[in-house]
Image (spheres, rainbow, N blue to C red):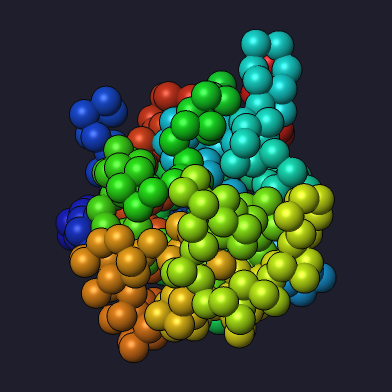
Length: 332
């Protein structure tokens, strides 16, 4: 009887938890939220505690940690390759155009890893830490929560070219951005929902300057940007210089995870070109922007689903990869 009950419990975990099955390259493996329940039961509490401390110290850190998970998963899958420093044959993804001078939060992840190594040595992967930190950052700023499927392992290498080519850029066309999402198994719904992460955080002047000074290539003003808003932006984002000056992605509620981002887009006040094209270049994305602007609950529900889906991009599981002792370098 006890054996039968154990079977039922195991079956219910795999049936009702948000299980993510791997693709053809890694057969018969899956991620599930209870992965560390026995091997490191305090893992999720430890991650949340340190993320909460970091976000309380600097609210911007929530967006930074969320962004790291995104930039990791779009390069070789969710394998913590973004955390590796350059050494030996490894050229760090931190040097890539999307990450250089902007990717941050590495010290927070170092602190989490150090605490987890003390609690349960070589058990919790850096890739899973990234996924948990992204969820916790969302929750701490008022966004939705979700059960994070776990069981990823860490890569033994990085891809500078993958980081340069696979991560959507602020100046990419809508079709280019959508293609980059589709290459990861994500669709237009995921694109619009995950773009909603721009409801928190900052962007650098260099990422949207071309919208302010008719640098689109055709010499024409960017009429998709509200001109009074553009005038405000020009004060701290000059035609040259000030590249690293920071601006809120959502100037209305920059530290609160909500659907104001979509309302800003409807008002032609999406900061990045990649934000505004969600409304102007594709009918399906336009309708989704309108729906999420109108219904915060709908946005939250889809964001959680899309984050789980993104977190399952080509994970290393089973005997693949390793559990790094330090997130910045592979094990000896």
